[in-house]
Image (cartoon, rainbow, N blue to C red; front, side):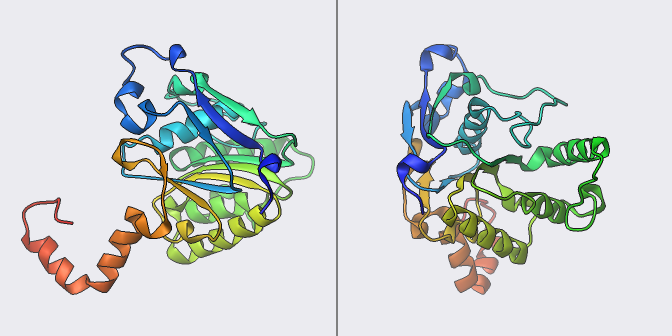
Length: 251
């Protein structure tokens, strides 16, 4: 993978003076305890339990870099709803020296809107663009996301929030290969995920948002890996325990 100076985003810094004193952001421990974050690898994963702030920071970084809050490329400009946190204005980015040849910010919950906008842009083009031989809305959510993503080429910057959401394990492996090869060619990825498959990409940095701070962790230390391994290796015993125990916090 390429060196530090070839990264498109090298550093994230939060100017807390630009965030309200009573903002909910100050109540998210991992985010509240963060002032600066250096990125050193072509692939950086944000991991952690729901509510730990990984998606919040990812979306803020995307907005600070210049992406449309709902997703798309750096050229997309549309809005169907307004749920952007004030963190996007407070995050300051140190960019690399090179400009990306392509770009994409993916949010699972708003990809339908991105696909609709992509179709609108396609209709305005004199040479209609097809994704995997079909328009995006004639494919399943997972198929359309993969087809759209696979249309990008060249060294680019890609921020993704839970890209595995609509993908089968087989499709996640397809995405695994695509991300790994694009990173080797110089692209940069920042991804918030729960997928033990994607987290297994060699050479990536994994940053955990658990335990109230953002810290590096090994693949085997991630909850995604540990819970998956425990379930696969102890399925019968664990299933019996889960179905008998009235307490949901059994693991």
